[in-house]
Length: 365
Image (cartoon, rainbow, N blue to C red; front, side, top):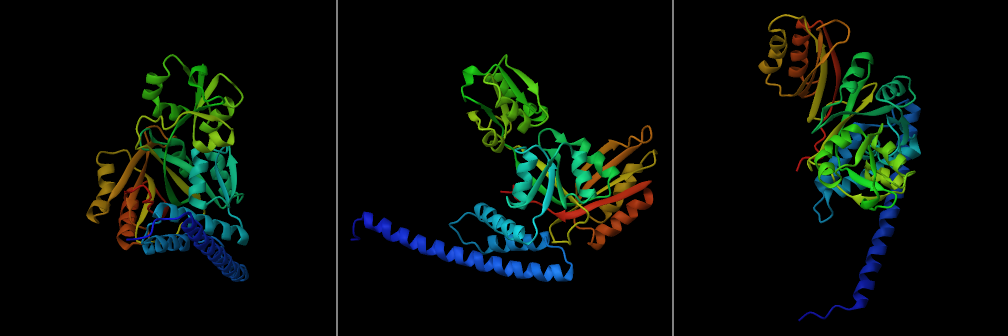
């Protein structure tokens, strides 16, 4: 029969943990020194410091080696921070995003680049594109669609005016929270929210906050800022915004659909090489004639290329002229994808390759 556990057993096990922590620290510093050596070589050869392809390989390799019980989601987060910290010692990445601090776009940026990147909040989606095009930032993060509310049309419009590429997509689970200074539901006389966030919480608000007026804010983070200055106000915001503005939770997870996510795009001046699990995005316009759209899609059907999304937008340049945005599986370097796009281009008035980038499968279960 085994001996009865003793308090001394806890101390003994904690000593083992302390020894392991010391080893982890030693190895982290050893890894960082090697990363700095690589940075010196890149600097001498005038190579780019940030390699998203290499980063993805590292994360995929680590999670594939993991046998547990440590969860893969947490492992990816930890290694993302390790990579981010090492890169900041080489040359911090400048990342523009739709601000202010605490927005879901900010959260998406941190999720992708880690907390050690240099983040630049800007006032609009257009300003994000401007920052990347003018080299004020190497990358930009913009929202493109929500699973409940649909596409962000303004982002699509920007791709018509800027010669930038999509270099990654980021899927972020969206959780909305009702927050206020006091955290007391009975004291709330008004609520501030971005219109899209309020729309995603419509049924909850009708049921639990009837008669309370919802005022529009430019972002969920701005809503939190306003609520932080008004004892009678509450805001619908992210946990990060609540923390930034020292607000208390009235209720967490008030979104009507719990399977609620937003897709963000990372924009830059180029796009990564293929990984084997990629997505390609294009936009094109057609002559206004019967069967034109059907004919333009035939090359993809003939090549058995799966189209993930088709979206149409008025071109705003000619009456009744439309621009079509398409996401498809595969990379522009795949022969069948390139050939299908070239055949479609022959039919179009205009066709633009927006980028080829790895599919974000982080929300797949």
